[in-house]
Figure 1 (cartoon, rainbow, N blue to C red):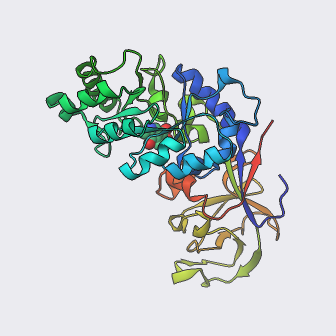
Figure 2: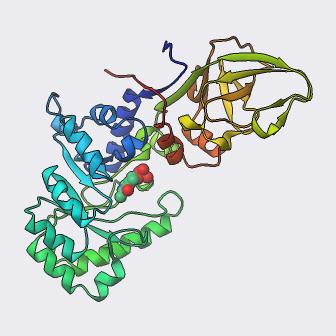
Length: 374
Ligand SMILES: *Cc1c(COP(=O)(O)O)cnc(C)c1O
């Protein structure tokens, strides 16, 4: 990849397409691709096209297309529609009642659970919608205990306005299979309690990326909702995912410093002897967080070099004393550099942040280059 940019993010849409295929094979049910937050910072429209989401100007292969795109905000749905997206769009986060009119206009499937909102949706002549059930996440959805103890008002709303789907969300699929089992049981009980009010063919969906990875025989229900794994993080081993992002920058300054000299704000790093310091134009304004200060590693010509001193807003310094390095050299901060891999998960762990936060932050300022396309 040759680029004259000072710093850039390569998004490997081919890798994302293959990660989608692996998720699809493991889940064995149609997928709602979660492309909220600009596809976790990587570019919603490019990613949507990469995984075969239907666009008006595309010869798409409906058999392999995702069942829907998942978003969290109407603005995200609006950007998809403006780009010509003709796919189903499911908004998984709750909308305020004042947004429901716009949701109708955008042909968005909202997640509803308050009987008043369900009645309002019907009075607006809204289309298909999904019933959200809270089985332990405690952030949105009808509380499973409330549904079991007082189902009447919800049942009444469901009979008047039957949902297309019903779903819940796992809180610990990545770290506790027993919690998944517990949430699944709660979901099944709610489903059974509402059975006479739900359409027999209501589409049930539960699984996020980690849950899909944990299933030996495919996802339960009729749909699954992967996000992070599409982008090559979190379930890398179990799903044989490919690294899909590469953060690169060019060395813009190179200098020798003497023993006792310090680097960057607050002088948190002192050279123990003469050192060669390279500066790259990436900082926390690019999503390369300050928690990488004195902890992160980057690759220079395939060799790992440590970050020294604080990561600043626009610039980060590395110790290149042990390697060959010249002005203009391309440094890899995330991703593959020849045989060296700085995986998204490994980098995030170094910075004591989640892979989600690392990816989403990369949207701040870095120009994105799409690579690996057909
Ligand atoms: C973000 C999100 C997902 C995807 O989660 P990942 O861990 O990224 O796979 C699925 N469902 C809902 C409701 C979400 O908000």
